Image (cartoon, rainbow, N blue to C red; front, top):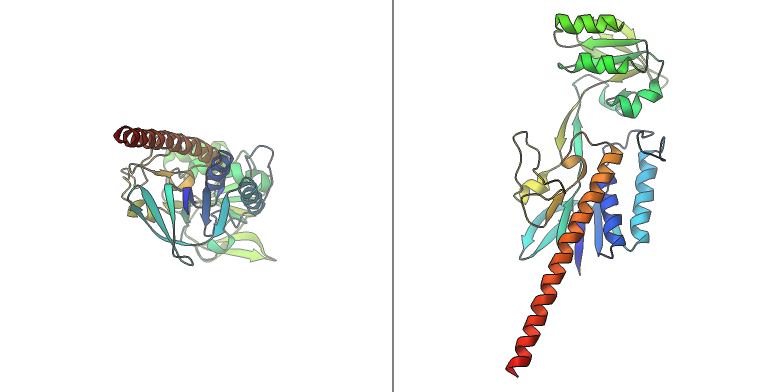
Length: 312
């Protein structure tokens, strides 16, 4: 069987695209490895009508929705993709392969956390990155901001909106203007390497500075780097921009005909609701492309039939 669309990645972007395509009566398969970026988070924010919903519950509801419209969702690992004529072959770890007319890659990204002992273990719980995703949860509590780059002061100033007890633990030099701005908003600055976290009863209670002083905090905000999970896009020959991210048009189409990208694999700052909306836009574009392909196939078939009848 050839699917109209194989969606690789079952996060908000991939599932929303699959739901839209399945409702358009396309044969859709979602292949999901089951390792969403936001799995450690207990709740998500900024999603109208879904405030406080756990990411796991959202994805479970999304999978059920796709299936309710006739789409398929499988837990599998994609090991490779390649073009085969006008179609694509998707190689899987547990199956041999599946065939698709169009591909949507929505494999997300991975966060590259600062190298501080214990940081990764608390990621998504009380080590956080996005004030709009987590600020409300830690409001009015002592907040630390790990300043590993020039964005540290601005991150701390933003978090001052949620708490009057904010400390910037700066790992890099701070300019005089940034110091004036921080001081004006009563943001404390502590310099020196953060060498570990203090955890009591499975709760973050402090950050250890220079291996001796402990700063009491209830949450630590960081600005991690990010790396797209784009191996499949690279293998397909998709163009990348100067920063190493896949190039797409506004509808998600890559430089390779028949291949689209949606969500965090193409947009590193997309929130859950943004990724879901991106999946909708991309799904509409994919369906429009398939509509045109179906029209062209029907015209070719009619012309071939007319030719045979004329020859007879």
